Image 1: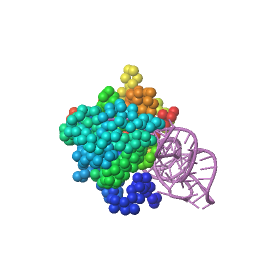
Image 2 (image 1 turned 30 degrees about the horizontal axis):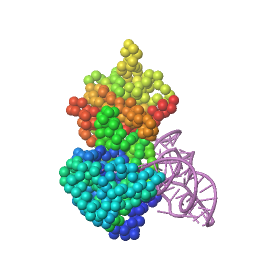
Image 3 (image 1 turned 180 degrees about the horizontal axis):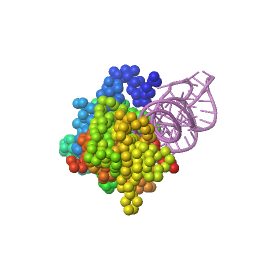
Image 4 (image 1 turned 90 degrees about the vertical axis):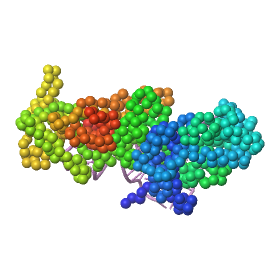
Length: 556
RNA sequence: AGACCCAUGGUGUAAUGGUAGCACUCCGGUUUUUGGUACCGUCAGUCAAGGUUCGAGUCCUUGUGGGUCUACCA
């Protein structure tokens, strides 16, 4: 068997273990900011961090990076925890908040001041911006850069005590205003904010910046491998600078490329627009790339994990084909989703030689891929529904479905001979008359008739009418936000949701429960939508089955 | 362009100086009481130019192309 190929992060970790770094320990963390919902991109980071922890007998912390009270809310914390659990991961007792470390962080900032590595700057945001220079020209030192340690200590303590207004002063690292890396030009460490914090209340008047809080939080938790996305690459020098100056646990930041999927967007700002402008039903709309949206769409956690692992981990920018995500879902559901009969676009069939009033209960296997899924009973009688597209009066070549003068098999039923179409005054087919072959019952067929097509059906008198929502990609271009000149909203697919209000389902399917995965025979995978009521069931299409017949027709 | 990072079939990812492999997609076929699944097969790749080496996708140089960075956001 081929050796399992390892990604570059696994290679780094294994190298560290081999060298006995940190005694061979591996500790990772997933550090979301509680200011929004998790999406498919986060799923990659979650899987990577937790998988590394598990694979190398280490641990993975969940740490909320809550250093900005202005944008963060408690309810995001709860939703994020729920989504991670749903994905199948657990942080045990290792739930942390950066806000838990505010006191320690404050003391470390004081240490920097004592070492002469930090100073209080009274400049305004605009002044600091101007002093920063550009990528090609060095910045200039702030006039407050030379303050004494005593003055810095005094001012910083008074910042903390709430003596100063927001924006009036900041604490900065004293590094190098001419550094070629803009992030090293005396980055901010603390700013004044009077906003109450969802965890720490009104205890603090100052809040640490990401560039300071993140490395120090990692260090406090003894994180060995701090995995983050590529856009933080230029921040690694600051990360290392703080930990070196502070002399604390030497966590190491490693960057990987974020996940992009075509026909999807993950920008928080743009997703919010979709919701606020009403292009979708909400953050958990089945077309949204959020974890809650994927869940409502009918993606299994297993399929998302498989996907997140399949996309690989590397440092080059990438756009994953959405068909890989769909493949992962079909592959998972094929073996676990019970097959059920649903007629999305009903056409009535009357079997003229079948006794009126008679109902036969047919034995139907639930999943040919899994015998332990068992069997169910399906009614059969004189009047049934089939898909309208499964009947054609004048069919094209290789059409193996119902057409006058031809036999066709009904799955878990009989072989039918199609006799004639009944039409209304405008020529629309209103029902089709057939005769059935008596000794052709599924499982005990002695007719010897060979048919090319097998159709699904729902018996009319026992059918339940439900709603089905079909989904297509939300955008009609692969990268909706590729062109900054064009609003991505203009690329929304107007037919991304197709609501069918008169769908007929078999009795067993009417017992569907939330969280159950179904395959609608010959159609696709479906789940119950939470909008469902006792009286009215609503199903969402997760993904269609592959359809080589449709593909063949499209080419013509 | 100042720094940093990246470059392998259509897409994504392996090959750690020694036969360019795997998955998805596409196309073709076999099986099939799902035009599903499964199975088989075809097409298709090392950004360019130099250099080092017996041997380079891999190391070096230069170029080209792409990405990130000038928030009191993360």
